[in-house]
Length: 145
Image 1 (cartoon, rainbow, N blue to C red):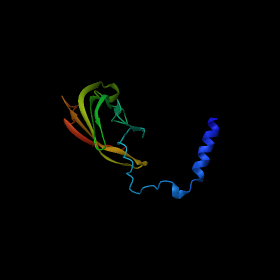
Image 2 (tube, one colour):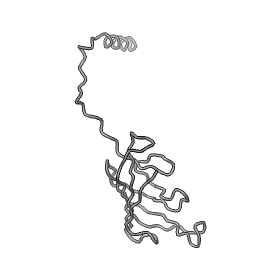
Image 3 (tube, rainbow, N blue to C red):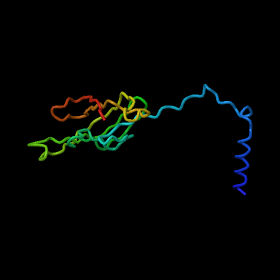
């Protein structure tokens, strides 16, 4: 019975003249753009990641325990910890040290590999206590991934 009703409805819709159907309005609002993403070292789009690798080549700098306070169309802000290898006496023998940090993502642009997606292109790290040597307490980097 359900199949018969669906078939009848489909046939009825197909035979209604186009002039009887409501006209599409040209002034219909466009769909709202999706919030930007942050692209990781593996070219994966992330939204509100709990961790983010800053040093893609050697893994010696990673943001962890990220708690996102905002994630919007122009900026995203989180607090967390920057885990940085002190590389003493050299990186393989170094020790990871924790630095509390506020993270701000900004400057969204079209992602060249996926032009329909916008990605954040800048990251600002504001160390709320001390910063790892020789990094300034407030530093901004361009995100290239």
